[in-house]
Image 1 (cartoon, one colour):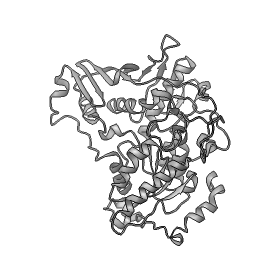
Image 2 (image 1 turned 45 degrees about the horizontal axis):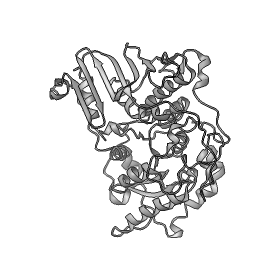
Image 3 (image 1 turned 90 degrees about the horizontal axis):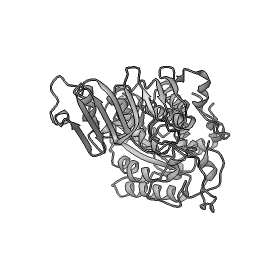
Length: 436
């Protein structure tokens, strides 16, 4: 029995009484329907719970999920009561405005109650980064498919464990690396150009994203009323509340917990989880990664860490925003709203019949739901997200420890076994790394 079930058997039992309380739960998708990938009818929607109700949930996930014909949001989970209530009200209003649709959205503070519900098929995780892996792994163990925001994890050990959980429990896990679905730019086309060999042999890639993280030094503030601060912190060290970490009320901005080591990986991991992901895709390294990481010569520098691949390609943190690929025939730069080449013919000449063509994603959420039906791996499958976030964590380790690191991507470990202490970090009880 996994850790959350011991504490939440009562919650699980309560969740199964939804019908008695007047809450309508849509018919679950039949396992045979999922296995054959047949079309899911309107009364066989995938039931989804939203875990985390901040800006990404409000601006992106909830609208997307509400507008999919074969999914229904039945629960929202959030440690802040204002965000939780407003998310539920939005969902209920949407469904109640449609003919013959009942209000279905239940509110939860603790994600463990959500995944204990047997009538929920899938979860969408949009919590702060330090909560991603625990929620993802435990959801997989509960038999739920998962959409998890990027960066996939806070540590390298978590990244490997997420892959293990998805594979062991045969779950569909989509990482929120939306650029693989051509959100924000022509990323798929850039990858097709590069992998078709138009640049020739690639020698160097630059990835222009933000700084590595800093330690959290925020002062104490008066607690936000109703906030479950202990649960917001989770595995992170106990510290006083500060609204920069968990903004008051229903905020409309991206909170700056992202810049602090205790909860994320700074700007390097925030946008790096997008752009290193495109570099990995273009280099055809989705199941591998670099073998050596070298810190910059200036120990105070926040740019310049180098990643060396076994095939001789060097990837560097720095340069213009996005990714710039340097090949023997020229350069290509891809960023949000940008696809340029030098010479311009590299990107302006249409692909030929013999060039590589990648499948076109119908949209990141749509692709996820389609894969829930077909049981095929999505465009940003869990291992792709795990490999990408591992690169950024390796870079952050090189910045922080100021040492070169030899990495074995096949074994998910350092060549120098003494460095394996960097794979994970100390966690506050009871939030240890979940078993699989």
